[in-house]
Length: 266
Image 1 (spheres, helix red, strand yellow):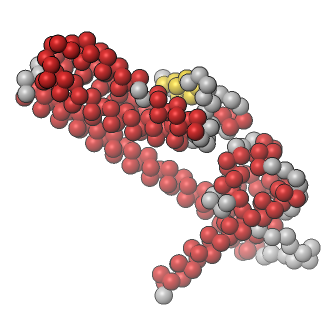
Image 2 (tube, helix red, strand yellow):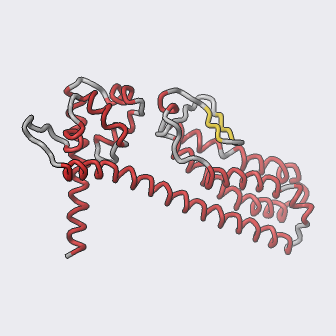
Image 3 (cartoon, one colour):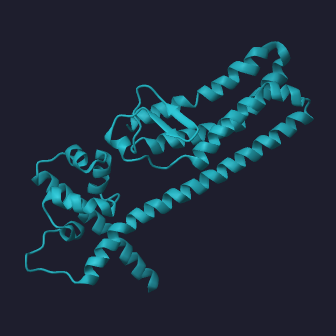
């Protein structure tokens, strides 16, 4: 019985999100505003407005008052997803329930971001262990520590450095001014990403971040293997390729998926 009640409550919650989104879309159209125009007035991206109207997310509580003013309704009407008669009044418990619902999805999104960060931290830790094991295996197969220090170790270390930032330290969301302006760089402490022709915002940043995570972790694990195979097959004949060109391709290649996904979701 308890499980059934929870399922019913979950279904009602989803319907409320849908009702809220449809109400926002209706009010926006009555005001003859596009999603972009409403987003500009709220200093957010039009992607966020699109998600609200489709019931995929709820706005931050701080957005409710300015949004209600722009759309010409009360905050209570906004949260209820319908216009209320002048004599209709809600008691304190009903208002509190509405506000709690509006906050709930924001909290769930934050929880999802933390879970994702924890998962990628684990993946990075596993990648680090794999690299260490690979180096000891290559030592057994005849690679000297000097050989590895001259070729794979420095470049693998760079990829691990990138991976550590992407997986553990990089912020999950960008400040609001990235959505308000066309900015082609992200600066966070000692790290700075600058990509000409690409504007960073909260629509494409999660995809850029994931591209960097996947490439840096996969590259760090694969580069030693590729270097070992080339050395085993060709020995010193491919010295420059093995020691320089291939490692640089692994490192510089990280910007390709980042740029592709950045432009796609810009």
